[in-house]
Image 1 (cartoon, rainbow, N blue to C red):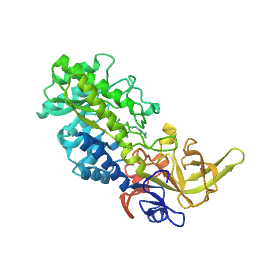
Image 2 (cartoon, rainbow, N blue to C red):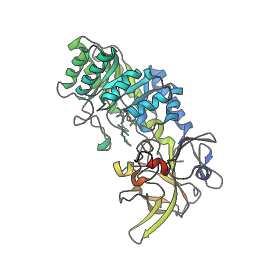
Image 3 (cartoon, rainbow, N blue to C red):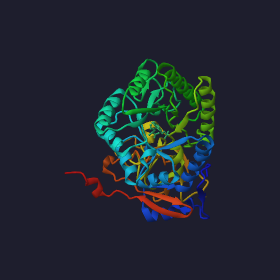
Image 4 (cartoon, helix red, strand yellow):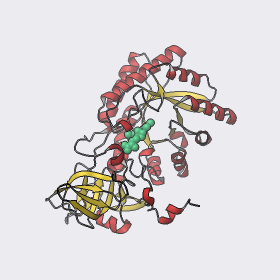
Length: 430
Ligand SMILES: Cc1ncc(COP(=O)(O)O)c(C=O)c1O
Ligand SMILES: N[C@@H](CCCC[NH3+])C(=O)O
């Protein structure tokens, strides 16, 4: 269905996800409900292994900000990928399931003293240095603990990723990384090379998220290769890792293409061959950090339809029992989702409606103007491609408890995050 691998229709018109019926899931776990298709996640990890890790000897770190909890961490651990974390909380989650710390990359543009101490104590594999403040803090911590740590340096390559402005990170005007249009990045390299505790292993850049072009990765590699060459010429030090970040786009609606990882990785590795050769450098190990591409299309959110308001000649609003608290992406990025009525897949007659949530906010719209079979109270709405940055960006606005997460795989289901209760909402109130 719409090209999603795990979505099929039962004989009575009910949506099945990896062979599990949606009415069964709704009865067992309630709504709203995040459903993650494990088969899809594993298939995509397999694709990354074949087309980056095995084929090119690359390293792939799952960008955990996209979707993280203990079970997701266990899956990544079992599959042998690295993990990219950006906060003490993500790092602590990894630690809680004994994730191999040498395979953790620690990111962030304002890592605190406490977070960096934690990373040093746990012995994370790489810290990606974002700014001078971080170099100061890390030097203090490492001196005090008589330790050393491997680092990559994050630069802003000045590439404009063609995606929503809130999820662009590669342009010069960015809060992330060291600027390259002046001497900042090279000065940062000098500081790191002169530091006793910091071992400079790589250079890192991340252009943006939900990208559908591969030529910008070629440009990124070219810029990083030149930078590695400059470092070699200036300091006589040859870096052996480059990290191209994540950003690989997925299918949300008919405007998006569904792309295999090789669409991106082949171009990246061809560019590495070309430009590292051009600058007379040895071939580096290439890291990538896919988040959305691994989990995005594996997620479906199930809601129940409630109030329906037909404003004659204006718009028909269909309210569901979730909204911007479980999916902020429409309000934040004007993201456009595809949805189906899970219990009416066999109905062809359609009408245009707007799906809204239950929050006290006019902007709490999930999907504007979507064509669906006539919705009635109690119907199950399934919003597709909600696996990335939905659960992880969920909030308790209006003191609404966050939905549970269930994993489905080949006819089986298992709960991996419980539904929050009203008592959970009160938990930290004094
Ligand atoms: C440094 C870094 N790596 C990886 C990612 C993952 O991005 P995506 O989920 O688009 O693959 C991000 C987020 O955009 C990021 O900032
Ligand atoms: N949270 C964003 C992407 C930001 C990526 C993290 N650097 C989204 O939902 O698309």
